[in-house]
Amino acid sequence: MKWINRRHIFDPLDYRLPNGCFEFAQSPQTLVFDDFVRIYFSTRKKEENTGKFLSMIAYLDFDKEFNEVLNVSAETPIKLGDLGCFDEHGIFPINILRHDNKILAYTCGWSRRMSVSVETSTGLAYSNDGGVSFEKYGSGPVLTSSLKEPCLVGDSFVKVYNNLFHMWYIFGQRWLKSTDKEPPARVYKIAHAISKDGITWQKEEGKQIIADVLNADECQALPTVTKIGDLYHMYFCFREATDFRKNHDRGYRLGYAWSDDLKNWTRNDELGGMQKPATGWDAEMMCYPHIFQCYEKVYLLYNGNEFGRRGFGIAELEQGR
Image (cartoon, rainbow, N blue to C red):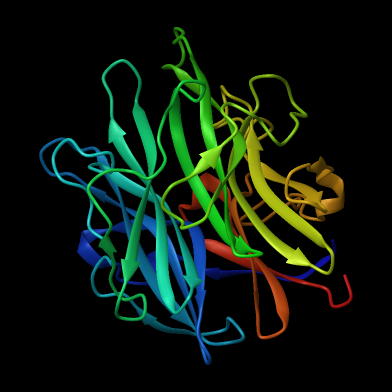
């Protein structure tokens, strides 16, 4: 895979975001229209009473060349969950899917915990107004923790191939105990599930489909998949479980794997062609990728330093690859 025209295209500091949100435009995800591309992302709002952050969804519309922002959402397109629900304290990320003249959204809902920082699950919503707003199918998740996937189910990315829904998602294997320097740290891996209707999912409990390259505590996040020719290509991000926020050598970078059957994946990060540069907005960190096709081209959106505090960039796949 060879990527060209890599550039930083959106900095949230340059725009007024909805609902009092500021900074951060994390996990960009696309909905392609005939003459523009809508990019959804997660941003942050600070609670007045606690000082803690809520992750909320916003979107912007780009022209077909990703040179100009045409519009920024005035309101968040999907509300957070009610008291005690799985998405009470945030949605990050949201994955948008067109299917059978419908626009679906798979959400990663966040809720706070006491002994550890957070729990996540996957929800489902739909839009009747072209993706401006979404209504939830229900108050609960469509995919959540289970016998062999005990925590942190989320980051779901869905595609339909051969009339079957395929979901790539992450699940938590365990939490590492806190130390004098850090709170409990989570370890999560990428898995796969299938569905006939996009609501009821069948998964292979606890099966990790992407091999580790760092160690057994490697954290893998945000899988994104597309088909080019006869192969399926997956990008994701990965990091060390601890000491990753300030230590750039242990922070997120992009990984790559390919498959010819959607079941067995061969990992080779070097072939992905998206290594960190020496300097710039993405030199310290590359994370939260989204691969998509539009206007006969293949693009990759991704976040840079500080988990997307200064927004996201784009790269274009060289033609013929």
